[in-house]
Length: 464
Image (cartoon, rainbow, N blue to C red):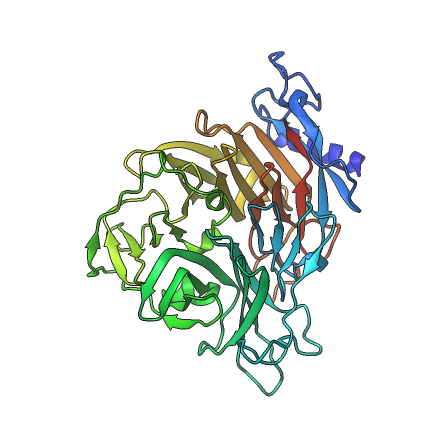
């Protein structure tokens, strides 16, 4: 494995001339001490499957191998994807398949919540999985800003005679310390992988009250028809809602988005939804969809679950706020990414551009996340290389508040497999997914030839 990784490093060093190191582990081209001198293994206990991935110190041009624990689809994934998240307690959460799968100790021990028969006082129905259809479910999961974990699972194959999708809401109530679930009937004939996000409360709406609301939207309907989705104020019972028209006409609203001096709880470093949700929660309450209206303004769902137009021009529709109150937005054009950052509530922006250059012919999938407590920003890109296979990469920006330039680039996996998202393709990797643990370790999905299904990796070597 080490020889294969070093071979990949040599090949990539020729493609990325001037950017890739020569394999030295401590000294770069200008004799500056490498970042590797500050690295230690964060998890002393061994994992069943540990692999070495080539990592480049972008500030000295030195490269080395870093150790990552690797997990396959049996740890919460399915044929085509993982849906990863983390909690403030350090849990790794995955619901790429039917049910939430989680680990409290960086992947050594794993547990699964499988819905069963509940007391009559609870929302209940039959156990979701149908015999012969195991492994075909899809879901989403996120920790809310009060510690609850909101998630859902979608079952597209209920049986030969039933052509109805099945939507199961799954909730971990932090105050009660227990999981509950509820079967929700929906009308869409094709729901597809969900994206999920919290609407920060307290909520006072026609649907009821709650500490937060949860929105679930269909990947299929959300991207093709600007349709609505499902919304809940208790995480169990969901009701349909519609998005406003892109032409505007909703009541205008003004919001102060500068939360840099606020004492935000640590949940704000883990409650980021998947970027394809195209929305982010707001600490003062509600939810923002950046660049939503045709005029470039944002849409804002308030704590009554009503729509408003917010006259703020975000640089991208993919944004979120971390615990430090920093606004992060990322845009993609061709093989170039731009990370925008605002520390004054979207009034002014600084930026850094990632140009993959001649090494990439196109972008397959990507995801990003900021962590305010750690002053860390991570960009994950899976790109089609000019040599043919797809390459999985992770950029780390440590100390983003002082310098937005990435300090390391890691090539996750062997980079030797060409896959395409979407039903009907033989080799699928449908979307990127990542999370950041409280110690700074990254959890990230990838795919290479060592497994027929996508894998995910947990970072073990970190700077002190």
